[in-house]
Amino acid sequence: MFPTRTLKLAELLLADCKADGLRIATAESCTGGLVMGCLTAVAGSSSVVDRGFITYSNDAKRDLLGVPGDLIADMGAVSEPVARMMAEGAVENSNAHLAVSVTGIAGPGGGTPMKPVGTVHIAAARERMPILHEEHHFGDIGREEIRLEAVYAALDLLYRHVAR
Image (cartoon, rainbow, N blue to C red; front, side, top):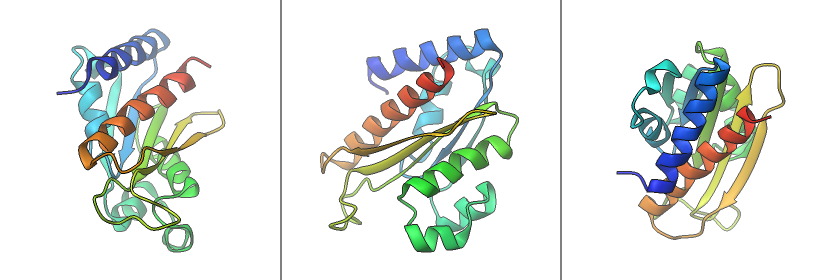
């Protein structure tokens, strides 16, 4: 289901988290749970994975993760501040030590000149550490490919947060 490189990264991330006694949560919009799906595709992931928040709608981002509605209205759901708040909200509303969030435009529609299809914001939060953020521009490579690239990028950012 997932590319080999993505599954191998998930395995490394889970092994490091298990060794460090860390639990993971996800907050996903455009990936719709694929990051969590990739993590739980690895046998033994239950010792590390806490929960996933599928926050596709703006209401879900607000209700489940505490992202302020005015922030979404001002910056847009696909933005650095919203991605950061999603990751932080996932840690605060779970039993996890760290979380990754993904919000973006997978297409084929929905893009604008300022935020074209393939724009994805990813953030990783960890207790007592600065939140990491990346903005990706995958291009209009197709909905499935954008989502899969976002999964890999999310796992990679989370892995780098664990390795700090």
